[in-house]
Length: 202
Picture 1 (cartoon, rainbow, N blue to C red):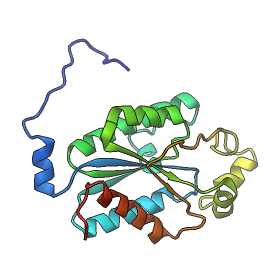
Picture 2 (picture 1 turned 60 degrees about the vertical axis):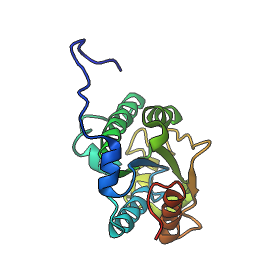
Picture 3 (picture 1 turned 45 degrees about the vertical axis):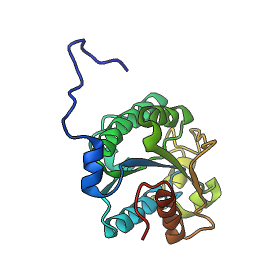
Picture 4 (picture 1 turned 120 degrees about the vertical axis):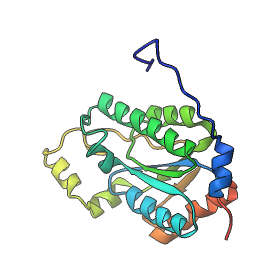
């Protein structure tokens, strides 16, 4: 989307990302957790956040429901609204990454094109984490009772029931929450961050 005025210009600061990394002791990056509702995205993101803070890593979770209660409360769940939701989140994540934070984005983000657009914007700072729980598992959990309401026709455009979910084709990480525990999934993310040199090993 082009700027809404030709008079806009990006104002570059005098503090570099290298300086921020030296100050914090680690690099900034964006881990994008995607999967069906109930797959475990937010739960895993919060656990990883806790473990990273305990290790002195500056990090923050951007959660789908939370942003829809504030920044994105004007958006619905039609395809064009979902696209705009993810576009805004991506721009927000870019600012967090530039600040030096490890930002954990927990969003269904059902369309592959939207996640690909996030990758293009964030480039090497982006990593896709597929929270791979199948529909039956998510429906069995149904922590918010949303699947049953969707089955009853009470919720329109519900991902996995009346709206599509396009699974990642080549994610950096794939976590099966039907077979792995919360801590096992969180440990895999921490190990990946260590292997990439984004955080220090213990």
